[in-house]
Image 1 (cartoon, rainbow, N blue to C red):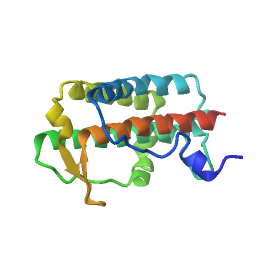
Image 2 (spheres, one colour):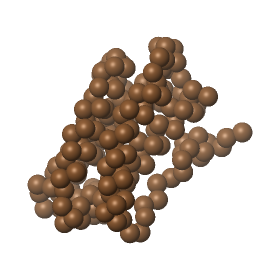
Image 3 (cartoon, helix red, strand yellow):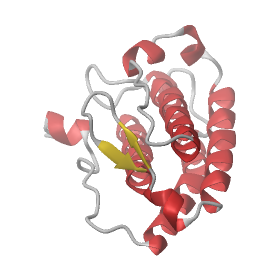
Image 4 (spheres, helix red, strand yellow):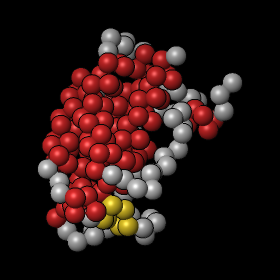
Length: 173
């Protein structure tokens, strides 16, 4: 039987590499580009009932996961833009559960998938034009006070997408 930890973190917890090379960053940009198609394939043809399946008791259902990916990755995209245009900005956090409970999280699956695709297309395009020095730029997280580089943040969000894709697969098995 799966432990709660395995259900919550089916691909493990995020652990950033100590050194992030430019080829790693390039690979991560590709993963950001590919995620919407992987999510779409995972949920293609699901019924409304199947979209309500959860990966664990108390976990989000498949539809909520897809909307959460859009919300979360939108916040990361905005953090990138702040960091690229301001000097070590302090980012704003948001209440993920509250966002997931808003009415728009009950919209159509097609809209959620389209949003994720467009967002990731723009985000990947932005990142593909970044210089090495821009990847080193940092923002400050208000809850920890830590400075986080854009390349470390990218790695986190690649993991985040794969983490929730694994949740979708768990819910369907």
